[in-house]
Image (cartoon, rainbow, N blue to C red):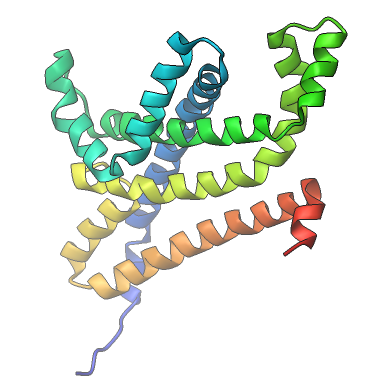
Length: 225
């Protein structure tokens, strides 16, 4: 079967895909703004010696990490508004589903980074009179962040890919706009090939930045590859 490719149709409607990319980036930025502080709080709770703090954090992290992202998106869009009695648009539902799940993954990144710092650093901080909060703030985090940054970039790339699930609830991100455009132009192969190219450029770029950060901040790990 011979197929005649025609990308001119896609280029003529590039504004539609551009609008979708803007929607993707907006959702990604908002979800990341939710996930980072949430992840840090969850990590601190999980590492706390008090079970009243650590147990809820473990339950939250395990629940969201083991839940399919698509199920969360649909649940927050259809079920959550019924539970709280408040109408919720597609953007808010996708933000909660993706942001809360990403927060669980970020919690493990924070926890792994902080636990990678030797016990001697904690003991030295206590020896000079620093409390737990100041120890984490001034001693542990500055060292841990250097090790966490490359992993954060990978999670950032995964977060961008997760936003495509918002198309299932009609949020205007890239895949949803592509679906609309393919229905209008009857050129789904060209439209989704272009979308694949867009995501490749974005994700590949993030991967290159992650590799650069790893070489800069973790040269011993990069040299071992």
